[in-house]
Length: 135
Image (cartoon, rainbow, N blue to C red; front, side):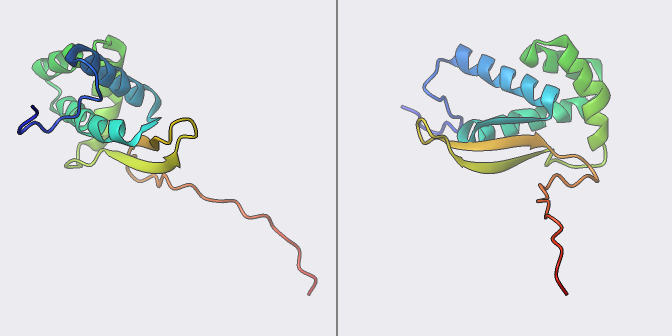
């Protein structure tokens, strides 16, 4: 029974779940935005924000804890050198989830999860065509 457990398992064993979340975290930090199911994005949000918080601390122990989870040295270096310094004045809320609708094959709810950039609005702006009026 799952009394008082708040994490989702996605019908996977613990080792597979941990590796899947580490891979999703690595992809998020490499690309800045990934497309996944809404449930996975919600679970990934808490893990990614904890990794950014470790990156903001910037000490060796934090770097080793992040490396132990993510297992990719280049992504950990990018997290500590490029990504975390952007959020030094921000207290949480480093990611954003944008819902997309359902996937055609199995009707799973899909979302984008992306890193929030300071000062750069990430809204999608629709381009309007310039039409000539006859006035």
